[in-house]
Image 1 (cartoon, rainbow, N blue to C red):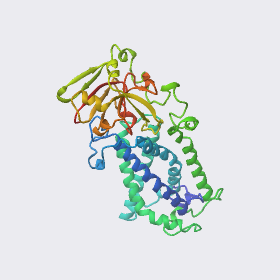
Image 2: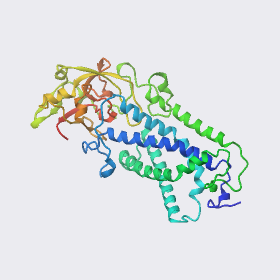
Image 3: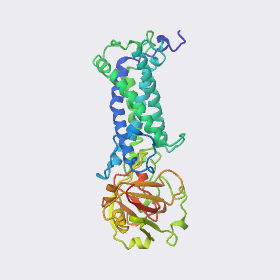
Image 4: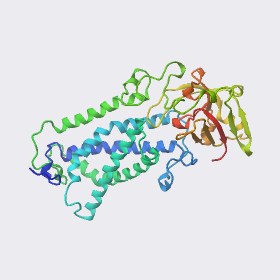
Length: 411
């Protein structure tokens, strides 16, 4: 019995074979492409080229070539793209692991390189395997709110995605034609060109290849069913047991919808948000300043918007009814008749996105508010009392809570 993983006879599973690997590869070809595109859209939604405040990935250079002003229509845009990104990513985990298992003999094959082309293929395979494990692992940890990374999640995941997808694209160009040929030979045990995946001394089979694919597909469906509920309301939301926000909504009443950070977690005390202490400072053209207490804000024209909240972790809420002052009206108070960019700063003193920049098109949207009420009641402390920003289609972290200062102007 060979004891070295470099020996083909070491790997005895009768399931390994070109058809089994090709089916998994085609599924990943479609799924990972969708993940990459929705991931790039998620990055664009943060408006990273608008302000260094938003940019968590310095020196991105040409990798930011596609960035554009994130739209505000439809209001559920980010809810859709990020929900697909996270839910699909989790559902593909069994497929990825099965694919890696199916080709593991190739990782140990000797000699390491038989030619320059073979060496390049092996290098792309290492980048593909390493990049895939890195991207899926960091993504899952972020979804579970386990921020154990040696730095910010955003640059790690962003740069890792480009490395992984470049290797994935190179591998797909090399292997897709062969995979499609293998799929056309469903009954062939050993189509040409991939014989090294088939064991020369296979063990007795305990399940068919179709049965193994059924197990992988069942695992993906189980993960889908226990994750997707985070994007829906009612009983279905409670099925998202693998999601950090998969349980019942926090509390009840008008403020009984999902949050990420509580006021206590952010270090917001009732004394600094009380009516006597809190003032909103609005700065605009030529350094013009306006200081507004909450009663003064209530005397301005108030408007209502029905908007959801969606976060990078993939969870979202349905539309909530917000009421407050339009951002473009606040800009006009300090001399900007035409909407401009705005930098919003929170009372929160620590943590990422305690400051966030919004584009002029987001300020201009009549549904963009400095919200004072939600669902007919005052904001709760956890939802940003005394005032928070709510902008259609923006990631949750750009909807700053506990707003203390707004600076309008070109950023």
